[in-house]
Length: 395
Ligand code: LMR
Image (tube, rainbow, N blue to C red):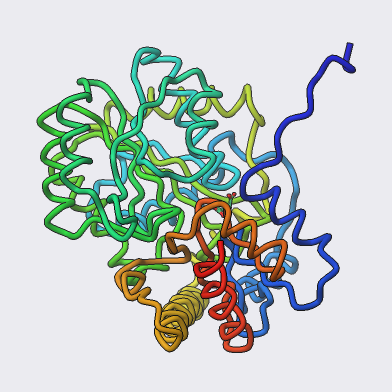
């Protein structure tokens, strides 16, 4: 029977990473998948993570199963990290999930079981996997406008008008809490206020993908949109990832946080999240969770980790400036990237130019024109700028 199964298309992000790995050209540059790179082009293990692992190795007593929703030390620390003092934690049904993707899927399964007619609104464009995850859970997705026609900023009017005119009560709206993936374009604070008010008026529920906390303006600052939404919304969902800010990509650690209107509602909601998890991957992996819980549970490690997050953010921001300056020396205006936040930027390059960069210059960017700014180094930036200049001129 299996010979009737057709070949699936390669993943638009991870598929490119695989092609990159096999490319023999030594000068190749990878600006595809969202992983942090240091000035040497490596994705290092954070010092705080190394120290936490040593502590775990010395003290861990068992590898037995964790509770379905993960350990309480982890979930409590994560609720604090994400919400700060802005919430009574007994209102949050919290679970450890394998990465932010695991959180999205566990939330989607839970929504689909109880609100099968709810639609999930995603930005146009959004992370390449969002629609697949929501639809795999059986939910219908709809797109709201996000990027303006010149691909340089937010189409705020279009976004508001789509949600106002086409959204229905009980629909979920997937918003990127900070560092929008793929565009790097976030709403301004007053725009967040307006979005929050509109969703409240329409009785639509915010579902925040929070994969880049700390990569925009800071760990606390990046939760501002969430705090804004919480003023108007007694119920919302946060899908957090610790892949990027702890550098724990392959450990798969994230969290699903469903905020309930009161503490009395939380046990039932948590029980349903547990049901979603149990029939999917049963219970979470221990190691990544232990690292995050150990760091957040130890003031010295937390301080070290916060410094490391600050340093990652500063490096990305300096690479963004260096790229803009490099393009400007070649007479090309990429200054619109200045206000973009986080790991990604939308360059405005088209799929043909992206293909040309790959085949002619061994430079890999996502076909949509998204680049991972963290993949730029002071060694590769000049070559990158020259190649993009050529691509813009010839393709
Ligand atoms: C990305 O967008 O590159 C990351 O979120 C990695 C992924 O899984 O796609």
